[in-house]
Image (cartoon, rainbow, N blue to C red; front, side, top):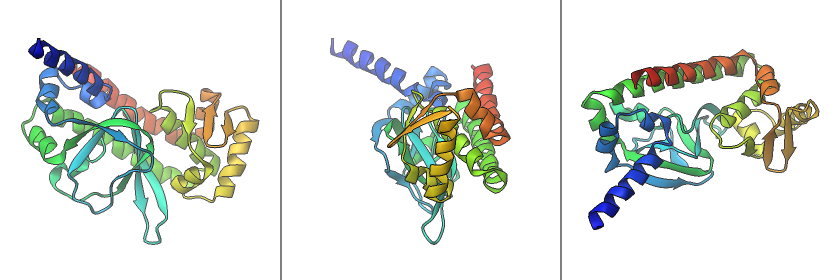
Length: 249
């Protein structure tokens, strides 16, 4: 009976881990080989998972949490360069032994699995499906960073805010996002007053409804049109990643 309970618990836990798309794309045997070292963790809002220059102990596979990857300047100002949700992993760039190139902070509270970087490195070096999936995901993540860099230089504040909201909507379980105007301004690297004016305009156009600490997306298609090409290009990169893992399976 005890053995049966352990197997049942393992199946439930494996199913939970598969809420992360990258883990779900692994063949069952590959996921089971990682499972001993995977640890389910709560990821509260604002928690710093690692900082620029860190040599990290863990990589993180979110299931319901959303993680912001930030560039922190010398004066303490921050700009978001990418976002990671249930589609991917934060910290896998450290597989080659380099230090973190950015800071990772939990943007939306939830859960995820963490895996010791050394365990992930060992599994990577064994070959098979994992290295291929991680490389495909890394390509999509770099495409997102590149589009953010282009958008930061050439997009309007309205386009930036629309894309920022859509990036989270893609990784959220509902059309409501818990976020303040201060947070949006900090992540976008703009003044709070600019976010206030832009959010009011989007609300007047019927695209969103903003209440204190909550943004509800009312018109997804309209928000995508307002976001412009940078959002479409970055999303296409992740759709290509998803198509690749579907074909692999």
